[in-house]
Length: 374
Length: 261
Ligand code: SF4
Ligand code: SF4
Ligand code: SF4
Ligand code: SF4
Image (cartoon, rainbow over all chains, first blue to last red; front, side):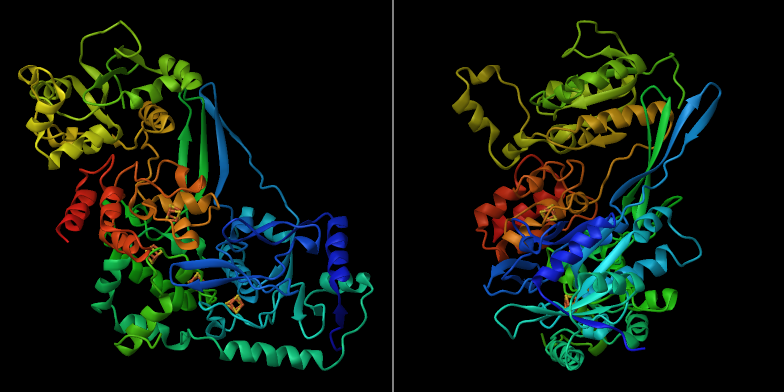
């Protein structure tokens, strides 16, 4: 059966938000903050960043207003959906002294129903990457599971990319193929934008049907594919993921790592901004009266010394070894471990690295033994 | 850890400093009662007239070593203390007063004091660890009172305290701050500074000042490069690294390189 496809206007988008709230979802969308785009509660499409976009480069991000009626011409801000699904800090246990024994006070993760409007394809793919690690591996993480179960995704295909995007290499975008409930293509040929909507799940189909929107013209699917192909072709940055394992292995002793380490500050921004980096640390806290203790889970980074601390010391003492680990894991070893790349090509690690280190340029350098063209 | 007395005996000593770090302890009003219940404050001139003799289980040392008398006294403190914890940028790095280490102190003394002969001072302001072995450092200008309480709680429980040694940036990202360096071009010492402040300045829209001193694996030269790229001048880069933790070697080295340029 051919998937049902709809033709939406602004009012239909508002209906979508309203219907979702009636189903108990908190609705979120990309909203312009003081310095960058952020995910914020959204109840009306009027709150979307109409006419706004941003310029991206290594260690560079600036919001820009170019005018026009586009609601989704924005580029990704520093944050993905990671912080909602896999929060930066969570208490996972509390214990209380009880005479000579102690008692564990359960902390069940609260189930949240959240719907996101306007998620870029790379971030949809990043959720799938997190699913693979935190849900579908040997064990599943109950905090992630509770947040993930209530997630509703309305993706927006990209017909323009940021300067740092390279999703064509990872195949995560610019057209979203899977992982969404609904996907939208914003069409800007008329006076007001129109939206080509497709469903990815039964829930998405039911919701679209309820908006009462008319069916989409049959040629819109092809036009979407063409527009995304054009966007993909315009991407400057590229990574050949199929060669990554060989490149990383061959370059274990490359002097390039020393060059990177002269610039890398081991600050960890890349890992925090990355939508798929999931590593955490555990902290124990106890009260002064020694009556209660808590265990907290906090985002960690492979750029910290504590990350590889084992009895007697840390395994990766140098910044060089940490960057080598990070690049190798994201581009190569994640594929061996989980069957697909750990990098969706969103470019955040390039934009938000305060030293302006570009993972694609470094990979190209390692691959070719010479600097990349860009 | 076991203590000879029922409660660990704590002493608080002060060298060249502004008292701000000791005040952090006093500022912990709610927790202070619990602290006072959990430990015996044996020596704390700032808070009480009761001054008991050592030995002490825990000595909290504030301030840098700036006089010949300090340099002797710190050895006495060390001898009397099972665990010696330095608190604040003065004790851990020499403090803002270490700026004199690049100047001629005798000239300052001549200019500032009416009777310079009465002043007995060392040429340099140095951290405690340059004089005696230190068991633990609590960074910051001033320290976070939560860290002090955490160290006491951890000591009582016989566990390692949770004290981060990584960058401020990790705290910044956890708080959902937008990076000021990237999105606004504001110089920030965060990527070379040890966490602990909870990214206070970036959360208020200001670049970090480096209050907690160099982080583990600090790469100050790379950060200085970034400041130049953002358009900072040589004196600005110099001043960025020469503040409360100027004498910490990672910051010292980069500021000296800046000077040579
Ligand atoms: S490694 Fe960089 S480009 Fe790849 S997913 Fe992470 S942040 Fe995005
Ligand atoms: S990486 Fe691709 S999917 Fe992500 S924002 Fe850029 S163009 Fe869109
Ligand atoms: S690559 Fe950039 S963001 Fe990542 S740790 Fe190094 S300096 Fe920080
Ligand atoms: S604002 Fe400062 S502390 Fe925060 S991420 Fe940027 S450089 Fe790091």
